[in-house]
Length: 568
Image (cartoon, rainbow, N blue to C red; front, side):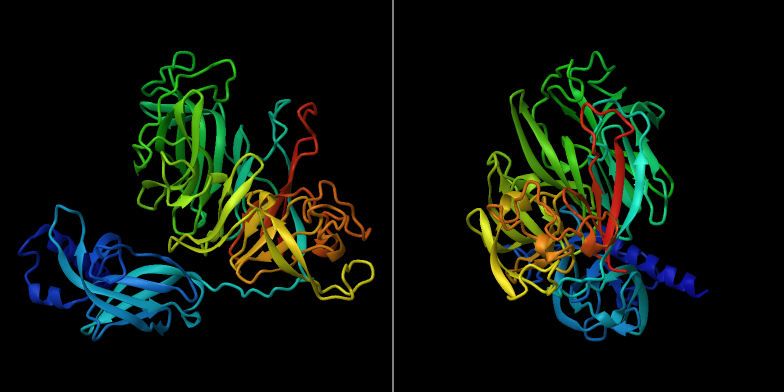
C-alpha cells in the first residue's frame, strides 16, 4: 500500500504541473490540498528569476541525476522553502540558496510560479548509482528520481608502486582482410569497466570478467524491420554509454530510404547513427544523414549533398560521425564532418544532449562557430567531472590550449605557446630504476602536439592527465598545480634524457633493463606505443597494444590485446 501511495503522489504532482501549464481550472476535487503539497520539475524547463541565468535571467533547468561529492544540486518546483527537507540517502541535505521563480515549459503555455533551491552533495549521503531522494514539505512527502553520487579519490601527486597490469583479452577476429591490420580503430569504457571496441567491420563488447567479446554489429548484416532495412558497409565509430545501458554506432550504410535506392544508383553516401539497448538488444536509428566523396568505396564518388542543417533536433541535422565521446550525463560529444563542396570539408565537434538536441560545441571555423574554439581532435575530458582540454590542432601544430569545465561551460585556465613547464617530482631511490636519486625534482616541458590525442591521453577524475606517448613509463600531469610525476613504470625510463625535447622519444630504450613485461607489477611493464581506450569510475585505465602486423601482414597476426592498469 505504501508504494501505491507514493505512486499516487508522484502522479498527482505530474498532473499538477501539467494542469498548471495547460491552464486548466479544475483538475481534481481537492484543489486546495493539491496546491499545498510539494511538487518537482523532473524534466527540462526555463526558469526566470533565479539570479543565475543569462543576461535576461533565463536559466536552462534540467533535473540532473549524476553528481560527485562537493557538487551543488538544483531543484525547481513548488518546494515551500520555509519547511522543506530534502533527504538523500539517510542524510537531510543542507539548502544553501532559495529563490522565488517563474517556470516556463514552452513559449505557448502559461507561466507557473515556483521555487528554486540549491543544496550541497556531501560524502555522508553515500556513494552509489541509485541514491534515493525524498522531498518533505507541509507534512507531505514525495519521491524524486534517484541520483548517482561518485566520491572521487584525492590527487596524491606521487607514484603508486602497487599498481598492476592484467591482460583482459587476446582475440583474433574472423574475416579480416589484408588491409584490415588496424584491428581496433575505436573504443571506450563504461563506468564499471565494460569495454566497447570496434574496427571498420565489427563492433564488440567485453564485459568485466569475460574471456571473449560479444559481437554487437557486423557489416553486411541486415538490420531494421518493415520498410526500414539497412546494412552497414563500413563502421566509422562506436562507444558504450557511461551507464553501460546502450551502445552507439555510426557507419556508412546501404538502405531503402530516399537518395539511396541501391548501392550502385544512390547520388549521396548515407550514414546512420544507431543506438543499441543492451538489455533488449533493440537497435534504433537516431539519425540518417548524407555525405559526398569516396566514402569507403574508392571506385565510387558520391555527389556532395551540401552542409545541411548543423544544429537542431537530432533526427533532422546532418551528422557524419567519426568519433563518439559519451559523458556520465547522457550527452554525446561527436566528431562531425560538414560537406560543403567536394574539396571543402570542415570538421567540427557537435554535442548531442540528453533530450536529443544538437549544437556545435567545438569549431575552429568561423562559418560554423562553436562554444569552444577548438578542433574536434583536440578535445579530451573525464566523463564524470567533465574537466578536460580543448586545443586547435593544425598541420603538426597545436596551440590555443584551454582547460575547461564542460559542465559549467567555462574556461578555467589557458596556456599560450606550444608547450608548458612543469615541476617533475622524483620518488624512486633505487640505483637501478631511479633517475634522480640525489634530487627531488626538476623542470620539464610538455609539448602540446603529443598530449592532446585521445589515444595517447586519459584524464582521470582526480584531475590528472596521464600521458602515454611513446614512452616506457607514462607521466601524470596536474595542470592546475603545475606538477608532474611518473604514473607507472621506472623513473629512469620516464623521460628519454637524450631526446629533444623531453617526452618525444620515437624509440626509447629500457635503461634499467628490467621494464620488459606486459603484465604484472606496473613498475616493470613496458608501456611503449600502447593506445588508450579510457578509464572507469575507479580510475582503472584500459589500453590496447596495436597489432604487430602491417598492410602486408595477413591474419592471424592481427590480434586484439587489451589490458587494464589498476590499483589492486
